[in-house]
Amino acid sequence: MPNEPTYDAVWPLAPRERRDLEPPPRPINLSGKTISFVWNGLFKGDRMFEIIKEVFEQRFQDIRFIDWDAFGNIHGANERAVLEGLPDALRERGVDAVIAAVGS
Amino acid sequence: MVRASVEAERAGIPSVSIVASAFLGQASVVAKGLGVSDLPTAEYPGVIATDSTESFREKVVALTNDLTEAFTQPLRLAVRETPPARKDIVIRGTLDQVQDHFESNLWTDGLPIVPPTTDRIEAFLQHTNRDASQSLGILAPDNRLATVWSVAVNGVMAGCRPEYLPVLIAAVEAIADPDFRIQDAGSTPGWEPLAIINGPIIGRLGFASGAGVMRVGNRANTSVGRFLRLYMRNVAGLRTPPGSGDKAAFGGTFNVALAENETAAQEIGWPTFSTERGFAPHDNVVTVQSVVSISPPIYTIGTRAKEILGMLADIFGPENAYWSFNAVIFGRWHPLLAMSPSIARVIVKDGLTKDDVRAFLYENTKIRASALKAYARRASTYDFDLSALVAAGSAPTAYTESTDPERLVPVFPRQDWIGLLLAGDPDKNQSRGFVNNHEQGPPVSRPIQVFEK
Image 1 (cartoon, rainbow over the protein chains, first blue to last red):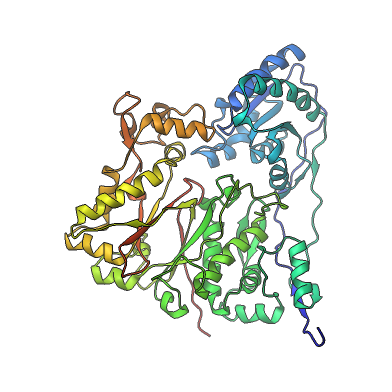
Image 2 (image 1 turned 90 degrees about the horizontal axis):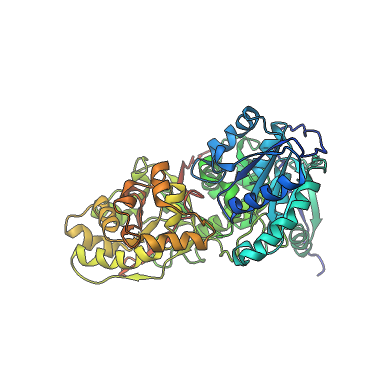
């Protein structure tokens, strides 16, 4: 269309805010390690963990597990408190690796 | 779940998230918002809820290989963006060219937008004394900074009038409150925010509160409702496919803003929705809460309060009953009932207060404990246990007064959680119920700071 006006439009989003994060070293071999499960209380995560334990105990020597209920439900009524306390709770228990479930 | 993984990484502990196929995109959006690219995941292929026990076991055994492999993968941080400066022009073009550019970048809600030009944005900013760069909070999952400027930009786009800006700012402050849990607004139930407007600003800005109040049509109600969803897409990052942040299985359209009929409330001597939440009658207030579904029209007939209340309970109770398992799991739930003023008048004539209405609804809406458990299972809470929830404090003791699985338990765990307001056609005998999505989107109120130059 002739003489159609033009528009100078600006960005409708906004800058991201993010906290610094120093990724821990990888790879890790799970033999001899302490693995903790953390769970959002949904989608049979507790049954998944039982199967994973069974498989990993055969696959990795001296592997140890800490069940999800040591930390609380990461998606329940106390989610905020559980997540805030998670780093300390993991360190206190000497956890080497975390398996989180279930995104669904 | 991804947030827990990132918290573990932050503590120096490698983590892997187990994610069902359809949720890998959303997990990636959440991780990116937290500064992580390629969060190590192990994929569960398919739909857990419809897999047989055998199939479930086979898939979990198979994903143990991915888990092992994922612990060898380095965690990569997301590349830091270099965002445009506030007044940078991202597109110069005709109306169609601007629409196409915004649409292809997923910056619209699927409807045409008003191009956000600096002139139009500046016109909005005339209606606040706040600095354009002022932070209103951070909105997950994208973790973008909500500012007065970005509110004005999206307000322009949504078709708001400049003078609506104070309402928009208050609404964004409400959804940015951590209590609102905007990070969960992309959950599969697909809830929508509902902005409830109270105060003299209703008349001043021309908000509708009467017939057709929840329809698109009136500019103030419609554009404020549209703005809220658009802002959640653009700044929180809650986008349906081809975006990935919003996993609503069905979802719904945005809710237009709901203004209360305060004149009717004053006439019958009931406190308004906002005064019940601690504000003064002359305060201008926005309250935002989640709505996961709206009831059918609840028609009531009769000249006595008990008749009317019985009919309200008859529909409002079952409408909420199916979703009430969430209330006791999460210990939070705020269903809302909007009544036509003509209905409220009958109730008031018999001397009943709003608290009396709540008490009646609490006492006269029950569900079998076995049904509550069955509904929870269907929504993937397989180990729903009322005794454990009462012990944990998220459910009241009324839920365990007997061990009979067929016992009747409350639909509404607490009567003071039921919201009541007056709206809709004042000449009709109709009410509507709004089902809230438990701890996701509880009502959060903010005063509207009107600015006169």
